[in-house]
Image: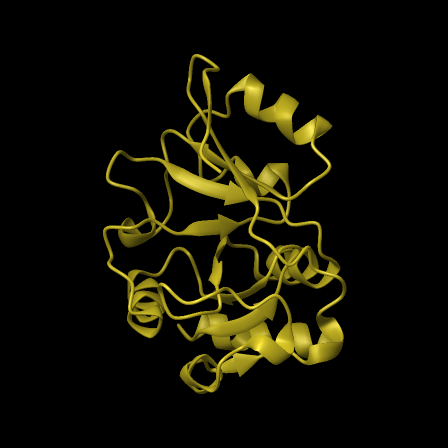
Amino acid sequence: MRKDIAECIAVLENGGLILYPTDTVWGIGCDATSEEAVAKVFALKRRAESKSLVTLVADMDMLGRYVRVIPSMAIDLLEVNDAPMTIIYPGAMGLARNVVAEDGTIGIRVPDHEFCRRMIFKFNRAIVSTSANISGEPAPHNFKEISPEIMAGVDWVAPKYLEGTPAGKPSQIIKVGLDNEVTVIR
């Protein structure tokens, strides 16, 4: 896995796109701090840039680098939840402009997937995580469902052995405000 992580990070550092497994579905990713790399994701997915993207971080320490204030309710949710959960936080910072929603919020998840966490930790930056499909088409539940167009559109593809056992469905999405108000999005 070390060799795969090193190859993946080299691509990310050069502004490239990766195709990789997560704890939910296969994703297209890039350096979430690079506007140019994020623009490539939108182009490959044929997705409007007005729609924000989810990012992944390795742990709570890394989360703190991208959100001005982490509401206490978000910490509580992360501690008790046992399913993949993306939390939308107010006050995004340190990320590419085109990865942040118009209202300044950002959806972030700490994945429960060994390859993802190790790779993100080693890369030492947040990465984009969006389903590996053209907008409007079904998200791939496993490696064999990824379209040839997506495969050809990225710079690095994770070997299938890294897949593990993804949930096969997107994460739940919960928005948490500074006053700990909670809105279930999905």
